[in-house]
Length: 375
Image (cartoon, rainbow, N blue to C red; front, side):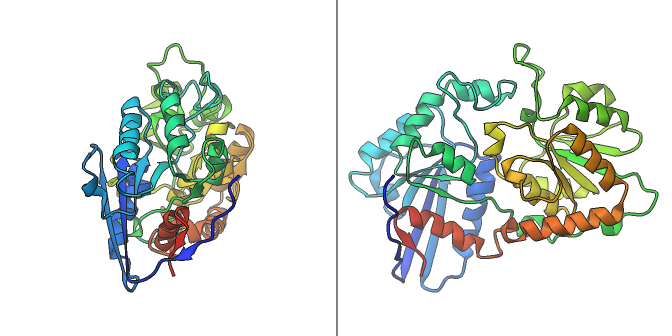
């Protein structure tokens, strides 16, 4: 392991240019790159100018890059991405000493045969297995890597020892203030329970050859089936095929784009939410994005006891424990209030990009990879 480099304060006045080659402009790319890039130029730091830009087509002219401090490849995976990655190293870096950084928020790699990475029942498994050699090459050949969690950093250290962690945050200017949901609850109302996520949490119906599996256990699935008249179950973004026959009793909300999501998910008005995840390397490397979202919506959550949620108040080791916590919270509005405030207290320093110096920390994450820091 290389020795930790000494950080040298940036000499002001200074200009820092953020540039990202985007692999995803729908989900994590918006959360981790586009959102902070939208806010960074407006951050008020005396004598510091910040410019940000992102693109998805390679530009070969080295002069294009001269106003940027580094080039970041966000969630790149394909052979074409690797070719662009290498073209930058071969044609641009000899002229401009701009570091090349790989940015990633998921465990995309398993063993050489594709096992023990993205679960085989997950629709993304087949996509990323064939791209593993290209991902490994980019990880190894980059000057540095930025991950979303410390567990993910640990997984990628075998490819590169210059790795920094940049946590996820939410934009308050889009989500709005936190308004506790328990304040609107009226005795006798049917408790509204939310799950929100993508189809990748369930075995995809088109994957007929994939093994059974998913982040919902059989007991939890059966519990939902048995309580559709007792609770107001809401699924947003996807619905497991095992529950499709209950569409007339379960509220299903189609997925919306990432910019519309905050307003839509808050409008559902759920009293509590659940985030079940199976125990796996893949899930232990995930970020705690759902706890941020649940708190932003003003509601308590029930989580599986995996790394991203280990500090939350209601974490479960199995379906039975999750069912117990759901019943306890659903039956006691005062308990929901208590758990929400504990969760809020836990997550508050990380919640918003605009607070707790989180944008400044973002800048220092990238400067730190180059041995620099803000004064």
